[in-house]
Image 1 (cartoon, helix red, strand yellow):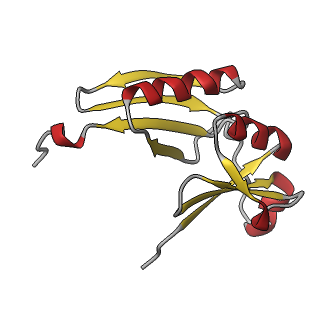
Image 2 (spheres, helix red, strand yellow):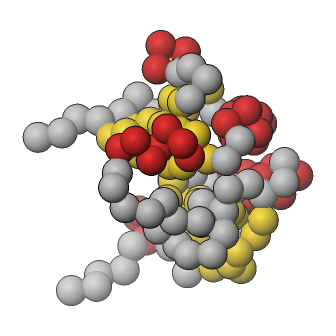
Length: 136
């Protein structure tokens, strides 16, 4: 059973992407970073490998999606509060991210979304697990 996840994303400008996510408070593991790739640490078990488009293409025979034109993945990260969601979204906008969907408040879950400079879509979600409705 897997214990870690490494999400690989193509980026047009590696330094711009690093600056954007560093501004959101994320760090990078230099052991897995160079001029072609940067390993963003999301948590102890979650990493995002930002790869230059040219380097990303060496891992696939398929065409690389332009995330500004099509959605290849929705990345959802948890937050500890509704306020943290709002602060993260505000900071993402300040750093050049774009809002692509309005905030949604379901009572037990609050989420809001931004697109990073490469168009990848990120959802920041707070869930009050004590109030999750029974969907069964």
